Length: 276
Image (cartoon, rainbow, N blue to C red; front, top):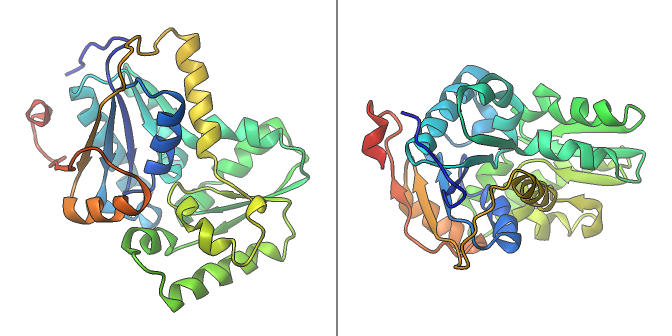
């Protein structure tokens, strides 16, 4: 079913877990009146180790879930699905879809640097979506890409950072630092949560969280298309997960003050109307 939407319809956000809350937080800072639905696909987390076929299946089910909710737009608050699934699914739905990578690479390409580092999941790195996107606008910029398997799980499972987690962060960061990048993009929405630890080994100003660029891009695009919510009231938030709502709530409490308990959703429900 394709639900009709209006300016006051909600906006959907999704990620494999709590990582996309970094995008939601930036978005709420500049567009507080929008109603937001957030889906954490915790059953299939982490996305970075999944096949392209699996990722397309996961994203398609989440899009159908949001379609049943009557959203006016969906924000892909996940670099991995933006890299792998956006081009294949973007024409299947009648709401706007905002992929984080495709929305920020033009901005990154205009930064006054000659060399930039990309730290992301294995799937994002393998797609070369960042380097190709940046080189489309700035072919002279050198792009160094390094996969960081395990970083998502560190964030999702973290209440305290264990010594082996610190070592994993330090080793991967050192692998990047030998290239002397002028900036390092934390190209997974989970990774900005690790800034306090990463800043122990490199200057905090070296790192870029694309979420702020992404949120500003979405705001400007919604303004251009006349789709901003015209309500004067602060927007509502609803949270959904595909598994372990208690774990999601516990993990998110460290990073984001979610305003309602997450609801467990079965994305394999044949009739998506049951999800409303």
